[in-house]
Amino acid sequence: MSLRNDALAIMKAAFRAADPVEAVLRHLRLSGDTLIAGRTRYKLSKYERIFVLGGGKAGATMALALEKLLGKRITGGLVNVKYGHTAPLKRVEINECGHPVPDEAGVKGSQRIAQVAAGAGEKDLVLCVVSGGASALMPAPAEGITLAEKQATTKLLLACGANIHEMNAVRKHLSTLKGGQLARLAFPATVITLMLSDVIGDNLDVIGSGPAAPDQSTFRDAIAILNKYGLLRQAPASVRNRLEEGAAGKVPETPKSLERTQNLIVGSNRLAVDAAKGKAKALGYRTMVLSTTIEGETRDVARMHAAIAREIRTSGEPLRAPACIISGGETTVTLRGDGKGGRNQEFALAAALDVDGMKNVLLLSAGTDGTDGPTDAAGAWCDGTTLARARTQGLNAAEFLAKNNSYEFFDRLGDLIRTGPTNTNVMDVRFVMVGK
Image 1 (cartoon, rainbow, N blue to C red):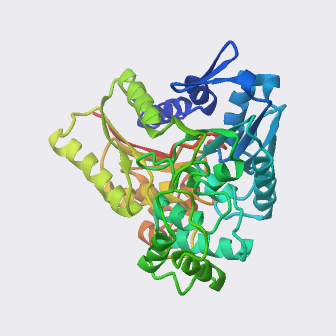
Image 2 (image 1 turned 135 degrees about the vertical axis):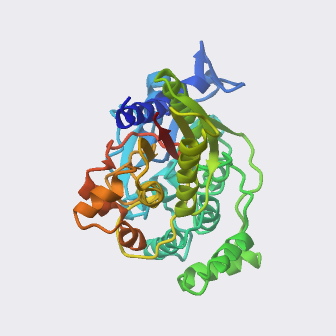
């Protein structure tokens, strides 16, 4: 039994289960002239044009599923995706742009998306594809705010450890598309939004900042979040002004209800985790899903997973070896140093400190989108030999962790997990593997 080979096989099973094409086609189908979305039916003969709009790391492959299903019925459309996350499309245009910090290409694409939406009429159908990353990939700054100012605000939120719900609450109120505003632009067209969830709880208004979903957050909430992290005074003056004017009722709120819209979640972290569990069982492991809703500071979550490995080894609880404990969700990293890495690599580095010397134990953490933070790695793994191997190269794991420099640490050990873009995104998967 090779823990590394098995961990890779389990990870690949999880990634396959999150395939966006299959996810879309599980929830959307044709019956003659009727499009069935979940439990809702739409007579296509009622519509003169069908547009595909949206954004996210899985946007291209979700649009590919729509082309497979609807073919020439699609009039056209545009989807913003992260650089490199493309697919061979014939009817829908792909626009590559920046993530996690938005760039000018994203702004231009979002402006074109807004134009198509605003030009849609009562006899048009807009199919909106939204997946993780859409918040950054569909940057349409509100009036009076520049891209640079929105970038600065995004960087502040990324560095402070704010979770995705908090980040998106702020970003929705600095945008002209997020928080239901894309659907408001498209009205009176019919809008069906297909969502691949990368957020804990699968909140419709948080996934990709919910461009076609009623928004539960307010300008006051956005201000409270910036205050919570001591960022309000650090934010650009234009950002502060807009939020304060919105809280005072001088700027229209994001829509709290929408007509002629349907939001349908087609995939989530649960699919990936269940597939991982099935593969681990097939490989002979006793398995348990810890949770698909784990969030919090990455280092704390890593220590908890390492503690489970120790408990299995010493007491056989909650499972006897060979065991595979699986978890999903998305943690956050509070930046303390100037190193390079992502939450999954930092998880592995923090866990390595706690499993040092343990035999036949391995922990893996990887992002299902194939990119962990601003790196080319999906994540990393560690085992009881990680620190010993590091010491032979003169690497001090604690120092690398203090500098948030997990990428260089694991790159030098050859323990980074590189998958390339997977064209999906349903948060992270983590495995605690304990052999006999």
